[in-house]
Image 1: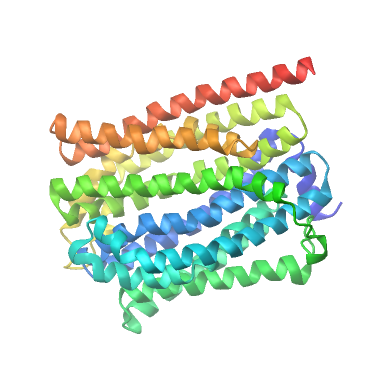
Image 2: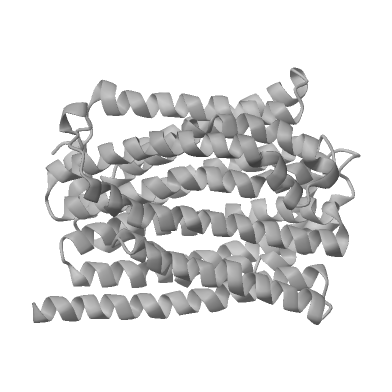
Length: 456
């Protein structure tokens, strides 16, 4: 049996085995991505607190950029997986080609918007004295928007047919090159924060070239994305956007959350607090990698199960992913808490950033609980994306992040007077409450799906 057929057999078989086999390579991919993000922060931290804070201000905008690619990719992943489950190979090919068309059109539009309005956005976010650093970094990465959007879409195409090995290799190329190029560009070539941006762009470009070769050069995917297989269908665009738009908006919500949290941090303790929170959340995101890996796997498995009208596989995928997520979260949260002081020293290796270590350690000891608040809500959102109900996923994220996390952070910080610890605590509690709502909603949806199949 060929490798591509093994992949299809895997995603249409036992959902537990499929989630494990899909999530492990995805975890490796995400680990590599987070490592090079952390590498960015560590190398930029050597330039001082203002430079690190600038990354904190640009990160929400960059999340929007990455969210564009991931959103279109999620839409493609969901639709392709559903067509594979329904054994409709022709439409699966067409869905992949429509995703690439969307990638090109949306990249052009948003590149123009971001280049024109970036300064104003940063000023609204309160970048203040750090704005020159933020612009030096932002103009470069946003100017190369199509590279990052295409990377997200191409990677999702591989994931949709269960080919996690090559999706992981492509990301590994990006991560390793970025880690190598960061110190070279920032310090040896003396490019400063702009060097970190160019390192990111060059690394992502190389990854895109590798994936493009596999798709159109080697041509050994289960999908055939030759232009001859493209047949424009407006409904296909609509179907992908039903997941892509909510998924992208979710990333915008995360960005708005970061903007609002940064604003509270500045009020309470100045831009240094933003630098501390930025560094701490990079570590939290590192601990979230297993959850993101499992969630991405669930999107594909749920999409295939839904397309095949398989209630048991859909139900199992949801419940198993949450159990697995909680088991890993407990372990990783404990590691973060126990070793918070040692982890914090990574961001304080120069005289300019030495004062940050104890503050980062405090933040990490509280935020270690954040990873425990995530699994049930995240997996429920990913199931909704997999079955094409992107709006449901968006509502969960909107309630959890933009409403509950910000409101709780405000109440604990300013009403209860807990200061920085109140902000951290509010984010954790808001996330847990919102996730619980999402979990209940997903359980009801899956139960009704089973009942409808039974009565059909």
